[in-house]
Every structure is written in structure tokens, then in C-alpha cells.
Length: 403
Image 1 (cartoon, rainbow, N blue to C red):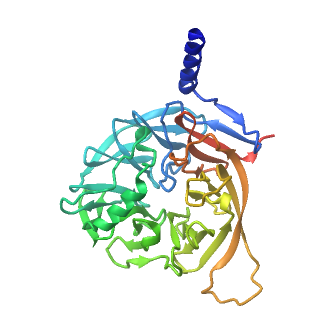
Image 2: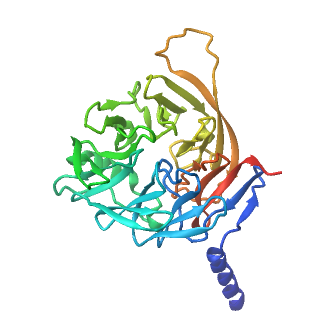
Image 3: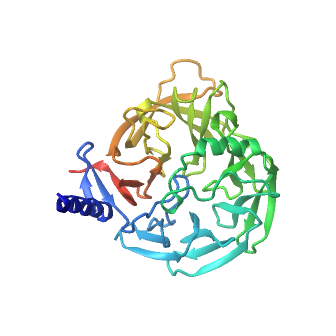
């Protein structure tokens, strides 16, 4: 009996440490899934951070040892930056990855590995985004010594998992009303410039991928208590609220840009946890669109192909806001607008529906680690992170079904 228990324990330990398969066809969906990374607790970037070089050759990802790059054609990997760093984004213009380390903003050439310190950051400051022509970085800092309830790295491998007390932390941080400054850093000179000050919790900064002067940011906090989505120009003018709540408990967030920089997409619920939409706002025309989703198809994060024709989502478990009984899937969505047989008033929202296709069964995935889906530049694969085999790795599922 003792020998049997020892063998069972050894077998369980091996199952936790053995590398997952490199490729398989999901029996529930018929789509091929591949493992892209070999390092345990490696991860693709957050869903709205660009992780791909402009030529579509490399995908940037993180490991416990630093930042690495994957050749999307050969799937060969290489280390680019070593050490405890926080990756920001892969450049839209050059094959550069930007990151912060030891209180400074840095860049690294993905091809050569050459690094450069760009600037020391303000006290209590961090950088969140780089603009389209890679001339400016943007971030925030807290003024004074007030307690920051938002930890830089929540518990879990490489700080990837959501903390169990996140809801309480969000309430406390919002109520603290800490004075904050939104600032930019000139990437060439290192000069910093303050754009905006507030006692709102400023977070989730994201430059337009095409307009170097347009920055999106959010008022962070419990979504039902904040007017979340805003834009500002890099000269500090034109502070604009993107969505206005029209009912109690309406929530909206997890905003991201379309690849052409024309649309801000975001999760919209009217009200919270009951009716689900993916909403879009055209920053040039002001036109709005809303695509409806079933409860099981709601996703923590969404993303869109470069041509805007397909969307994807990472699903959610029953503990998420949608409380979906069968939502643990990676999804592909085909947007379909409804025919307008009524008035042609341009101020009206254009309604539609997302037609869902299941790509990956995520029943064995622990959703404290958010999968954070993105499309590869060739639009043929959906990339996501998962702990379905124990440790976290980066995977990709093919959009087309396997033969």
C-alpha cells in the first residue's frame, strides 16, 4: 500500500511538471491547438497590449526569466531581455519591445537584443503604453504618500493571476481618491510632461495604434460606479468621455482599439450581469454599434482581426460577472448587423449580433488566470495563455477547422 501511494504521488508530481503536448485537435470543436512556448509560467501579453512586430514576424511574450520573442513562422524562440521587468508593448513602427525595470523606461531591439535606458520615471510612476510612431510613452503616478491599494503584481506565477480580494481592493482604491498625474515621456530625449491631473483613479492607458496624438485612458474602479472610458490629446486638450451610462448598474470596460485606430471596442452590460454586448465607438464619426451576445458567449476579453471582420473572446467561468453555466471556451465571433427597416437616424446605435463558434474547450483552465486572447497578424490563429495543464504556457488555436 505504501509503495502504491508513493507511485501515485510521483505520478501526480510528474503530471504537474511534464510539458503539455505540442499540438492536438480539440475533440469538442475540431480546431487544432498548438503550444507556442516551452517555458513553464510563460505568458502572452495582456489582451490590449500589442505583442507583435510590425512585420508580423515575432510575438513578444514573458517568462520568469524576462522577455522573449517567438518567430511565428519557425516557432523558434529567443531571449530578448533578462531580469525582473514589466513589459509594456511591442512597437507599432519598429521591431522594439518597451519595458520598465528598476524605476526606468527601457527599450530593446528584438533583432539584436541591444537595450537602451530611455528615462527615469517619476516617483511612484509607471508606464502603460507607447504611441503609434514610437515618439511618446504615457503613464501615471500617484502624488504624495497615500496608500496605493492596487498592487503592481497580484499573487500567482509572474503576477499573472487575479487576486481573490480584487473586488474589495477596487472599492478601497476608488474611495481613497488619491491625487494622480497622467504624463508622457519623450522617447528620444527622456523629457516628461504632465497632461492631466485628477483624484479619479487613472488607469488602462492605451494609445491609438494609428494616431500618435490620441490617448485612451480609464477612470478605474468598480465598473458600476465609474464613467470609465475617456480619450485625451497629447497636448492635454480634448478630454472626452466615450460612453455615458443610461441606466443604473450599466457597466462598460475592457476597452481596446481596432487595428485601424477608428473604433474603440468595449464590453457593455445593460444592466450588469444580465444583458451582454460588445460595443464600438467610431472616434471620427461618433457612430456607435452594439453586437449582442448570449450569456455563455460573454468573454472577459475580446479582440479583433486587423481587417475588422472577425472577433474572438476568452469566455469565463461561473464565478465571473456573467455567471455563465457553460462559458469556458475560446470563441470566434462573426459580427452580423441587423437590417434597419426603420428610421435612418444616424444618432441611433446600430444593433447587431455576434455569431459564435467554439474554438477551444477551457473546462480544465482556472480562470483566475485570464486567457487574454489576440489574433496573430496573419489572422489565422487566436493566441491565448492557459494553465489547463498546470503551469501557464502560451497556446494558439487555428481559426480554420482541422482537416
